Image 1 (spheres, helix red, strand yellow):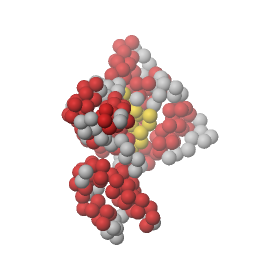
Image 2: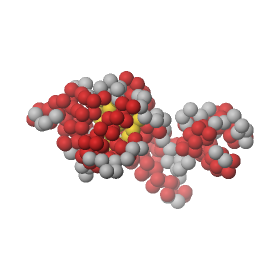
Image 3: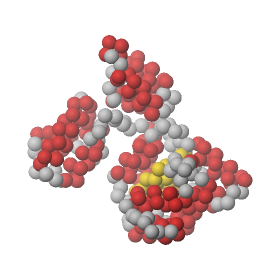
Image 4: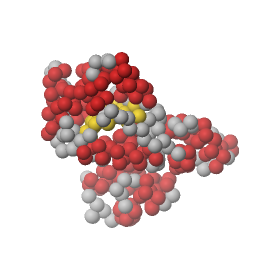
Length: 284
């Protein structure tokens, strides 16, 4: 990494520290970046700082207009993703929308080379689904049949250390895509972690599928350990801290934004941005 790039990262880091209010506070908001490392970078003492650290800091402070804060759900999910990954388990996570599942998954994947996040949607065909996995893995789907794509995914999972597939918003996919979970499990049992996550509708779909005897749903249910993981929900004080961290200083506004959010981090974000756009004389 050249000196010019490091200087840009230093400048971004300085702005980040200024926004948080202190170097110690900034280090607590970042992952695996000590207060001492921040001090050395800002002081120009770069000799003993590895490129990997520079890159980590760059990712965490660049585009830091919106900042996240640890919540009850994110703390649980940080532990959960790692635990499932290390022990090659298969699980289903259920939590209301906008509670931070996706952000937690992205953070986990960014820190674990062989963890792959696949964002699902209702338009996905079977081929779309497999292509999305291959793209996340850095593999090509060009010229491959559906069967060959499936085999490429399995081969990749069996080749790397502690692989993990995280399927976000899995409640949106078609029934036929559920059946891939059976193939993944059967061919990578005890070798790869698989997590599907979504809103309570995902739980309802699986339970209804089991009751109605839909093809594959009993098998899917048994492979997720015949249970659903429901993380603790975020506390109002944690949501309020997110708004405070992103620039809302007025206590009455913090209370209003938190109360109006109905537990949704997306609504916290939207209300915070509206507050920050107001003329200062109205925002007071």
